[in-house]
Length: 283
Image (cartoon, rainbow, N blue to C red; front, side):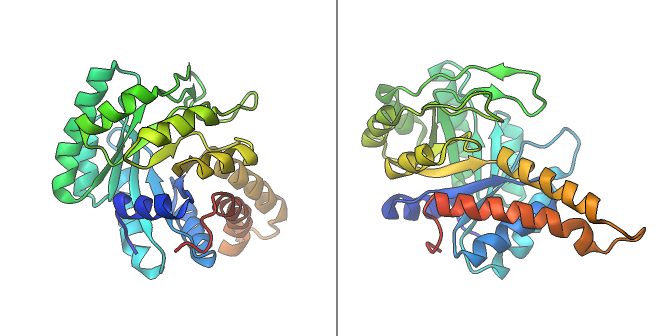
Protein backbone atom coordinates (compact mmCIF):
# COMPACT_ATOMS: atom_id res chain seq x y z
CA UNK A 1 0.00 0.00 0.00
CA UNK A 2 1.30 3.41 -0.94
CA UNK A 3 2.49 5.33 2.12
CA UNK A 4 3.88 8.79 2.81
CA UNK A 5 7.46 9.41 3.85
CA UNK A 6 6.22 10.97 7.07
CA UNK A 7 4.25 7.87 8.05
CA UNK A 8 6.83 5.30 7.09
CA UNK A 9 9.72 7.05 8.87
CA UNK A 10 7.73 7.96 11.97
CA UNK A 11 7.16 4.26 12.61
CA UNK A 12 10.82 3.45 11.98
CA UNK A 13 11.92 6.12 14.43
CA UNK A 14 9.49 4.99 17.11
CA UNK A 15 10.39 1.30 16.78
CA UNK A 16 14.17 1.71 16.23
CA UNK A 17 14.66 0.23 12.77
CA UNK A 18 15.53 1.71 9.38
CA UNK A 19 13.49 1.52 6.19
CA UNK A 20 15.51 0.22 3.22
CA UNK A 21 15.24 2.58 0.25
CA UNK A 22 16.21 1.01 -3.08
CA UNK A 23 16.96 2.95 -6.26
CA UNK A 24 15.19 1.13 -9.09
CA UNK A 25 15.57 1.71 -12.82
CA UNK A 26 13.69 -1.26 -14.33
CA UNK A 27 10.50 -3.17 -13.57
CA UNK A 28 12.39 -6.33 -12.62
CA UNK A 29 14.01 -4.35 -9.80
CA UNK A 30 10.69 -2.99 -8.55
CA UNK A 31 9.02 -6.39 -8.61
CA UNK A 32 11.91 -8.12 -6.86
CA UNK A 33 12.09 -5.50 -4.11
CA UNK A 34 8.34 -5.51 -3.46
CA UNK A 35 7.95 -9.28 -3.51
CA UNK A 36 10.94 -9.79 -1.23
CA UNK A 37 9.77 -7.08 1.17
CA UNK A 38 6.29 -8.60 1.30
CA UNK A 39 7.74 -12.03 2.05
CA UNK A 40 9.67 -10.56 4.98
CA UNK A 41 6.80 -8.26 6.03
CA UNK A 42 8.99 -5.17 5.75
CA UNK A 43 8.17 -1.59 4.80
CA UNK A 44 10.16 -0.37 1.82
CA UNK A 45 10.81 2.73 -0.28
CA UNK A 46 11.21 2.55 -4.05
CA UNK A 47 13.37 5.41 -5.30
CA UNK A 48 13.65 6.93 -8.76
CA UNK A 49 16.94 8.46 -9.81
CA UNK A 50 16.70 11.94 -11.30
CA UNK A 51 15.61 11.10 -14.86
CA UNK A 52 17.56 11.74 -18.02
CA UNK A 53 16.47 14.82 -19.97
CA UNK A 54 13.51 14.18 -22.29
CA UNK A 55 13.06 10.63 -20.93
CA UNK A 56 9.94 8.97 -19.53
CA UNK A 57 11.83 7.36 -16.63
CA UNK A 58 9.78 9.09 -13.95
CA UNK A 59 6.44 8.31 -15.60
CA UNK A 60 7.29 4.63 -16.08
CA UNK A 61 8.47 4.07 -12.52
CA UNK A 62 5.65 6.06 -10.93
CA UNK A 63 3.03 4.33 -13.04
CA UNK A 64 4.40 0.90 -12.17
CA UNK A 65 4.75 1.48 -8.43
CA UNK A 66 1.39 3.23 -8.07
CA UNK A 67 -0.22 0.46 -10.10
CA UNK A 68 1.05 -2.40 -7.94
CA UNK A 69 1.55 -0.90 -4.48
CA UNK A 70 -1.92 -1.86 -3.25
CA UNK A 71 -1.30 -5.48 -4.26
CA UNK A 72 1.36 -5.67 -1.54
CA UNK A 73 0.13 -5.52 2.09
CA UNK A 74 3.18 -3.59 3.28
CA UNK A 75 3.94 0.16 3.45
CA UNK A 76 5.49 1.28 0.15
CA UNK A 77 7.01 4.72 -0.41
CA UNK A 78 7.60 6.23 -3.86
CA UNK A 79 10.52 8.64 -3.67
CA UNK A 80 12.41 10.87 -6.09
CA UNK A 81 16.09 10.60 -5.22
CA UNK A 82 18.66 13.45 -5.37
CA UNK A 83 17.58 16.46 -7.37
CA UNK A 84 18.28 20.16 -7.09
CA UNK A 85 15.83 20.95 -9.91
CA UNK A 86 12.52 22.33 -8.64
CA UNK A 87 10.90 21.54 -12.00
CA UNK A 88 11.63 17.86 -11.33
CA UNK A 89 10.09 18.24 -7.88
CA UNK A 90 6.93 19.58 -9.57
CA UNK A 91 6.91 16.68 -12.04
CA UNK A 92 7.32 14.16 -9.23
CA UNK A 93 4.34 15.68 -7.43
CA UNK A 94 2.30 15.53 -10.64
CA UNK A 95 3.26 11.86 -11.15
CA UNK A 96 2.08 10.93 -7.65
CA UNK A 97 5.37 10.47 -5.83
CA UNK A 98 4.89 10.40 -2.06
CA UNK A 99 8.23 12.10 -1.35
CA UNK A 100 11.18 13.85 -2.95
CA UNK A 101 14.81 14.36 -1.95
CA UNK A 102 16.03 17.86 -2.77
CA UNK A 103 19.81 18.10 -2.59
CA UNK A 104 21.41 21.47 -1.88
CA UNK A 105 24.24 19.94 0.11
CA UNK A 106 27.01 21.37 -2.07
CA UNK A 107 25.62 24.90 -1.65
CA UNK A 108 26.31 27.32 1.18
CA UNK A 109 24.01 26.86 4.17
CA UNK A 110 21.64 29.73 3.33
CA UNK A 111 21.23 28.61 -0.28
CA UNK A 112 20.61 25.03 0.84
CA UNK A 113 17.90 26.36 3.16
CA UNK A 114 16.34 28.42 0.36
CA UNK A 115 16.25 25.49 -2.09
CA UNK A 116 14.86 23.10 0.50
CA UNK A 117 12.25 25.59 1.68
CA UNK A 118 11.10 26.12 -1.90
CA UNK A 119 10.70 22.36 -2.37
CA UNK A 120 8.74 22.09 0.89
CA UNK A 121 6.38 24.86 -0.21
CA UNK A 122 5.74 22.98 -3.46
CA UNK A 123 5.35 19.54 -1.88
CA UNK A 124 3.53 19.95 1.43
CA UNK A 125 0.23 21.25 0.02
CA UNK A 126 -0.02 17.91 -1.82
CA UNK A 127 0.94 15.80 1.19
CA UNK A 128 4.31 14.99 -0.37
CA UNK A 129 7.23 14.63 2.03
CA UNK A 130 10.63 16.27 1.53
CA UNK A 131 14.05 14.93 2.45
CA UNK A 132 17.08 17.21 2.33
CA UNK A 133 20.81 16.81 2.96
CA UNK A 134 22.96 18.77 5.39
CA UNK A 135 26.68 18.27 5.24
CA UNK A 136 27.63 16.39 2.08
CA UNK A 137 27.97 12.69 1.24
CA UNK A 138 30.67 12.43 -1.41
CA UNK A 139 31.89 9.51 -3.51
CA UNK A 140 31.79 8.60 -7.19
CA UNK A 141 28.98 9.64 -9.50
CA UNK A 142 27.16 6.93 -11.48
CA UNK A 143 29.39 7.43 -14.52
CA UNK A 144 32.45 7.14 -12.25
CA UNK A 145 33.89 10.31 -13.76
CA UNK A 146 33.79 12.57 -10.71
CA UNK A 147 34.51 11.95 -7.04
CA UNK A 148 33.09 14.35 -4.48
CA UNK A 149 34.55 14.88 -1.03
CA UNK A 150 32.38 14.29 2.02
CA UNK A 151 31.72 17.03 4.56
CA UNK A 152 30.41 15.87 7.94
CA UNK A 153 27.12 17.32 9.19
CA UNK A 154 27.45 19.85 12.01
CA UNK A 155 25.06 19.36 14.95
CA UNK A 156 24.80 23.11 15.54
CA UNK A 157 23.35 23.57 12.04
CA UNK A 158 20.69 20.84 12.29
CA UNK A 159 18.20 22.64 14.56
CA UNK A 160 18.29 25.82 12.52
CA UNK A 161 18.07 23.99 9.19
CA UNK A 162 15.05 21.91 10.21
CA UNK A 163 13.27 24.91 11.73
CA UNK A 164 13.82 27.16 8.72
CA UNK A 165 12.92 24.56 6.07
CA UNK A 166 10.24 22.45 7.83
CA UNK A 167 11.78 19.45 6.07
CA UNK A 168 10.43 15.97 6.90
CA UNK A 169 13.68 13.97 6.92
CA UNK A 170 17.34 14.86 6.94
CA UNK A 171 20.16 13.00 5.22
CA UNK A 172 23.35 13.41 7.24
CA UNK A 173 27.00 12.85 6.47
CA UNK A 174 28.86 10.69 8.99
CA UNK A 175 31.43 8.96 6.79
CA UNK A 176 29.64 7.04 4.06
CA UNK A 177 30.07 7.68 0.32
CA UNK A 178 28.05 7.04 -2.81
CA UNK A 179 28.99 4.21 -5.17
CA UNK A 180 31.47 1.39 -4.64
CA UNK A 181 34.05 1.97 -1.91
CA UNK A 182 37.75 1.98 -2.78
CA UNK A 183 38.47 1.45 0.92
CA UNK A 184 36.07 0.64 3.74
CA UNK A 185 34.67 3.60 5.68
CA UNK A 186 34.66 4.23 9.38
CA UNK A 187 31.41 5.89 10.37
CA UNK A 188 31.41 8.58 13.05
CA UNK A 189 28.82 7.12 15.38
CA UNK A 190 29.68 9.74 18.00
CA UNK A 191 28.76 12.46 15.49
CA UNK A 192 25.53 10.59 14.69
CA UNK A 193 24.60 10.49 18.36
CA UNK A 194 25.02 14.27 18.54
CA UNK A 195 22.88 14.76 15.42
CA UNK A 196 20.15 12.44 16.65
CA UNK A 197 20.04 14.22 20.00
CA UNK A 198 19.18 17.57 18.39
CA UNK A 199 17.12 16.53 15.35
CA UNK A 200 13.34 16.66 15.53
CA UNK A 201 13.01 14.78 12.22
CA UNK A 202 14.11 11.26 11.18
CA UNK A 203 17.69 10.93 9.97
CA UNK A 204 18.72 9.29 6.69
CA UNK A 205 21.98 7.63 5.64
CA UNK A 206 23.06 7.73 1.99
CA UNK A 207 25.74 5.45 0.60
CA UNK A 208 24.47 2.29 2.28
CA UNK A 209 26.09 -0.10 -0.19
CA UNK A 210 29.34 -1.72 0.91
CA UNK A 211 29.38 -0.20 4.38
CA UNK A 212 30.32 -2.89 6.94
CA UNK A 213 27.27 -4.53 8.50
CA UNK A 214 28.25 -3.79 12.08
CA UNK A 215 28.56 -0.09 11.31
CA UNK A 216 25.21 -0.05 9.51
CA UNK A 217 23.48 -1.64 12.49
CA UNK A 218 25.19 0.71 14.91
CA UNK A 219 23.94 3.66 12.87
CA UNK A 220 20.38 2.31 13.03
CA UNK A 221 20.65 1.83 16.79
CA UNK A 222 21.65 5.48 17.06
CA UNK A 223 18.96 7.18 15.03
CA UNK A 224 19.17 6.37 11.31
CA UNK A 225 15.64 5.65 10.02
CA UNK A 226 16.19 5.27 6.25
CA UNK A 227 19.16 3.92 4.34
CA UNK A 228 19.68 4.33 0.57
CA UNK A 229 20.90 1.32 -1.41
CA UNK A 230 21.77 1.03 -5.09
CA UNK A 231 25.28 -0.24 -5.86
CA UNK A 232 24.85 -3.53 -3.96
CA UNK A 233 21.78 -4.36 -6.04
CA UNK A 234 23.59 -3.52 -9.27
CA UNK A 235 26.37 -5.90 -8.24
CA UNK A 236 23.82 -8.63 -7.44
CA UNK A 237 22.03 -8.14 -10.77
CA UNK A 238 25.31 -8.41 -12.66
CA UNK A 239 26.05 -11.74 -10.95
CA UNK A 240 22.56 -12.98 -11.79
CA UNK A 241 22.92 -11.84 -15.39
CA UNK A 242 26.13 -13.86 -15.77
CA UNK A 243 24.40 -16.94 -14.36
CA UNK A 244 21.50 -16.44 -16.74
CA UNK A 245 23.78 -16.07 -19.76
CA UNK A 246 25.75 -19.17 -18.84
CA UNK A 247 22.59 -21.25 -18.38
CA UNK A 248 20.70 -20.37 -21.54
CA UNK A 249 20.46 -23.36 -23.89
CA UNK A 250 17.61 -22.34 -26.21
CA UNK A 251 17.59 -19.75 -28.96
CA UNK A 252 14.15 -18.68 -27.63
CA UNK A 253 14.77 -18.72 -23.85
CA UNK A 254 11.79 -18.57 -21.52
CA UNK A 255 11.36 -15.47 -19.32
CA UNK A 256 12.24 -17.51 -16.24
CA UNK A 257 15.53 -18.52 -17.81
CA UNK A 258 16.37 -14.91 -18.60
CA UNK A 259 15.17 -13.09 -15.49
CA UNK A 260 15.03 -15.84 -12.87
CA UNK A 261 18.74 -15.79 -11.94
CA UNK A 262 18.75 -11.99 -11.86
CA UNK A 263 15.72 -11.82 -9.56
CA UNK A 264 17.08 -14.53 -7.26
CA UNK A 265 20.47 -12.83 -6.90
CA UNK A 266 18.90 -9.46 -6.24
CA UNK A 267 16.30 -10.91 -3.86
CA UNK A 268 19.08 -12.37 -1.73
CA UNK A 269 20.68 -8.92 -1.43
CA UNK A 270 17.37 -7.17 -0.72
CA UNK A 271 16.54 -9.71 2.00
CA UNK A 272 19.97 -9.26 3.57
CA UNK A 273 19.48 -5.48 3.69
CA UNK A 274 16.00 -5.76 5.17
CA UNK A 275 17.21 -8.01 7.97
CA UNK A 276 20.34 -5.88 8.47
CA UNK A 277 18.18 -2.81 9.15
CA UNK A 278 15.92 -4.68 11.60
CA UNK A 279 13.01 -3.98 9.19
CA UNK A 280 11.76 -7.57 8.79
CA UNK A 281 8.42 -8.14 10.49
CA UNK A 282 7.80 -4.41 10.93
CA UNK A 283 5.08 -4.04 8.27
